[in-house]
Image (cartoon, rainbow, N blue to C red):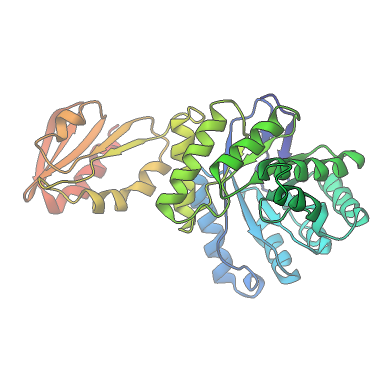
Length: 362
């Protein structure tokens, strides 16, 4: 669906990106640790900045941070001064935290007018965002709907998805009244059906960019399944402008899962395509260990190639014949192949070095 374009970042060293319009679907995640002590802990600051650079190499475009107190707000400003990654401050209840974050290079504020006290407080945040050139994300979750809508849902007069959408509309109307259009909306539920229904209805009536996500999606496998179904359904209808895969797992897994979903949905091109076999009784090579060691590095590379990691030589070169570079094992030997043709046979202990050498030639 056609939407307006919303801009994030651009202050200081931060990259400026856009969401909506003709912009590509962006990928984001949320930092999973506290940052309250960053201002007094330079080692932690450097670690966070390094990790943000690593996430960017993987393909992440935006990272959101929880800001529950003033110390965290100041810490986020410091982090934002050290990274190119556009950062979003996640604010609840206290509008003053948003104002503090906007003293730094924060690219966007996640805030809901309904939980910070008054329209006057919202206006203060809007004015600060307008002055700074920052965007605002409205985040609606199925568990935090207004009481009147909760009542209608309980009485069966509207669906939960309709309640989610109506809540988003009410929040957007406040920003419209303040003549602020740099807004992105997210409507999330732990139910795939509710997430799809609410986003589909909103997209058919409004031109505001949508952040897609299934909230509280669960652990790695369940969360990826739910997110994949919801995102593919909506993205195939050209609904959705930025996504986050919410997992009870590591931040890198969220980014990798999101990256693969975007690729499979045709919303992101290029980069290394990694295929690997699931292992079986013919196992002659530690596929899982090799993939674990190489996945992050491979996905961070800008080479537009296919890499195959296969467990045995029975099917390896044949099933991976389309790969620009493949590796498979047999006992204590490992073979390397290109387009199905074996090019090298080596000792298993030398697999990583040989693989790296052949990769550098592509």
